[in-house]
Image: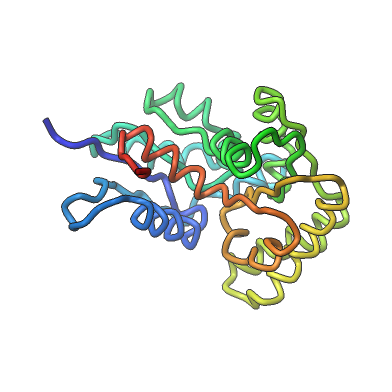
Length: 236
């Protein structure tokens, strides 16, 4: 019997996809190349912006995402991960159209918060405006008994959105890190016990935020979910 194949629907953005794959490799308890997870990666950076469509400002990303998902299905993927939080607003449509199982990054991130802080009640989320508009974390949080708090709109525009754009553009990462640290301080003031980097660009610039409150990388949660689905043991 062949080993399971993990599909990665990536390119949203390219650095976030690379970050996911690096974390997957580092989290896999392999002693040889041959013991690592079999992975097929479809990375298409031309997928229309996920947030712009949710806000009525651009074309739908679904057709391009379906192209990638069908390619992964043809490649033999047993399940698929999408290392982009905002893209999860479209998961139901993608699964309905292809029948390919897509792992839930949002719930995985919140479960990571529960592991970091058992009994956590309030989680602060740093995300794109699209993820906020789709209320992805709020809906998942309600199922887990977690209250989700977000930064005010002004902080979102001035700090979170700016930092995400900077990372995507390969700009001043130190400045982006300062913006994310500022946003984390706001979440802490709002009573957040744990923060979630709920955009896959944010973990690349959250070192300062981690000095303010415990931060969970949503990509790390997705890696854990993928390894669990593939029955890869990571603990003792």
